[in-house]
Image (cartoon, rainbow, N blue to C red; front, side, top):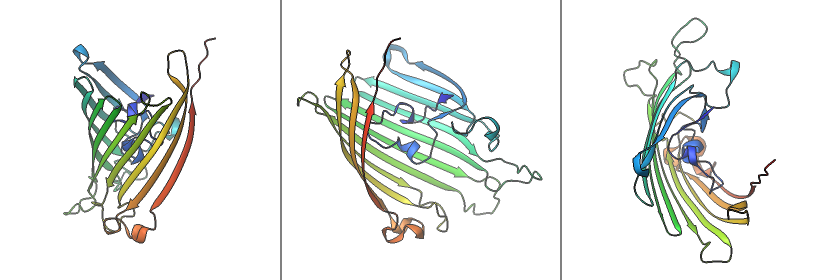
Length: 261
């Protein structure tokens, strides 16, 4: 099992309770069966990764690996030109489903070819850590031969998530966290129930405590408030009039202990 080195998904540290954007919107899996080659650029200027994966994620193993007969291919590059600034990009080619149906060998109209792209910028300066991520997902249905190719669509997403550490200003190790995420799949057919445009806003606070001998907190208490609102004009009718809008409060306690045997 290998990490999928796409966008922020492979080093997401859950400073927020939610998943990484590409994981949250089911653009890429966080891990998959495959082979990767990883390395660092000279003089600490960044890192790179190339991978070939099964393409079905980490939840399917053994006899369940039958829905996808094509490999997924990935390239990832991150560059750190100066201390505190990181820019990066990822590209992944993947397919969903089988090209031919198992029964009779006819073309499978649900077979997808996906081109996934991610651009990421991180700026860390003093107590502020600002991250911006832009995702593009292009989906093609090659076995649908209608002249207008009406089922093809492009989904896009932008996430901005700043964190502020108050550790050096307060007697407690506290972080103020927030995120604004806009996910747009309105390019789908109007009759497609997956068509939606979603704006998600999160604000929260983290309290780190019980430091170990390396001054690393062994426990973290997280409190997040998240508001999700769908654009009724650019979503399927199921989302009209705020039917699926939501507001949620998440309280989470995490801990990490290790003992040498």
